[in-house]
Image (cartoon, rainbow, N blue to C red; front, side, top):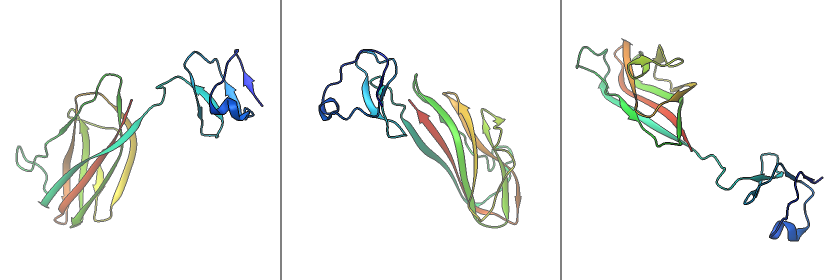
Length: 166
């Protein structure tokens, strides 16, 4: 069924094929393009209207014995998240493990404050994931802060996955 809410002229292969049975145009404007949506139906979309999402992992790798920081000793340096105007960024998940020992307890912080959903994480030799979407602001500093260790843990791997959208 064709639902065209305004007078529209279709050109190119779609119009030539005569297959307009699943075209749904909602308030089309000049320069709209036709794309297939998730239901495999033709819909109009403004040019450049696609949102592009990139998921990038930012990893902390701490080689050797893991300890609770004391002043500058065993301190893990934060990294800065920065993105351009018109972009957004969300912390979406963390993946982590240690190579040996019992466990490490840590928090993920943003600008020195704990991030909801990423506190009291217990890192063991079994790789695990924490998922909680948190919006970020350009120039946020993210860090992991170790608050406890058990059983002489070694070799920490901790990756924060951030989705950048534009």
